[in-house]
Image (tube, rainbow, N blue to C red):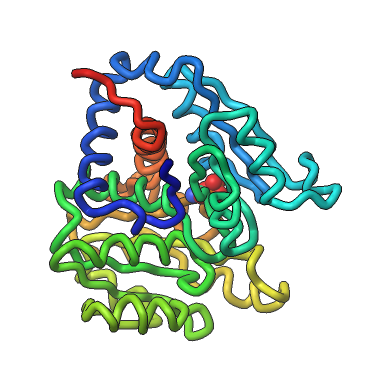
Length: 307
Ligand code: CP
C-alpha cells in the first residue's frame, strides 16, 4: 500500500509516468470513465478548500467511483475530540482511498501510519501540498514542454506557502532548474528549505524583494497569496497582504513566453486585468488538477486501464 505525503514519495520516473497518464486521461476521458467503479474516495478536510477537495471528488466521479467525507473539523467528530489516528482507522472501514487536509504539519503522516487504505496529503499546515505540486508540474510540462532547464520565480509568502515548499522539493530533481525567490524579508523561505534543500543540492537560487527586478528573466512566475490563516496576528497580515500585486505594467517587463501560475485562491496579488493575458495560466492549471488527481488515484489503487 502506498501513500502520498510529499512529492518525493514518487521518483522522477514515476512522476513522468503520472504526468503521461494525466495527459492520456485529458485526451481520452471515456477510456477511464469506469476504471474506479465500486471504489470510494473519502475526503477528510479539517481546513477550508475549494480546488483540492472538489477536484479530488470530480476526479473520483470521472473515474466512475463514489465519494464521501467531511469538509470541516466542525462537521466531523474531531469537534468532539476524536484524534486523526482514530478517524482514519474508521474511514478505512468505509472507503478505499482517502485525501486528508489538516492545519497541523505532519497530520497526514500520522494518518498514513494508522490507515488501512492509501492516504493522500491534501495539505498539512505550512508544510507540504504534494497534489498541488503534481498539478503545477503537469501545467509546466504541458505548456512549456519540459520541467527542466527553467528559471522559476516564486513570489509572495514563501514562508508559510506549502505549495512553494513542495514545488521546490519536486523541481530540484530536474536538471538546469534555477530559482528566484521574491518575498519580503519576513516571508522568506524557511531555513530548512534554503539550507537542507537548495544549498545542500547545489541548486542556483537568489533572493530578492522587488518583483520588477526579477520578472524580466523568468520562464515561470509562480505567484502565491499571503497565508492569512498562518499568521499569529492580524496586523502583520494586513501589513504584508498587498506587498505584491502583479498587474499589466509588470507583465510588460516579462518575456513573451513567460507563464504565470498560481495555486489559487487569489486574493489581491494578481490584478484581474492580468487574467486576459495569454501568459496567465492559473485557471488552466486548476483544470489540470483534475486530470493529475485522476492519475494519482489510479496509481495508488494500482488500477491499470488498457489502451
Ligand atoms: N490550491 C489549493 O489548495 O486550493 P484550495 O485551498 O481551494 O484547495
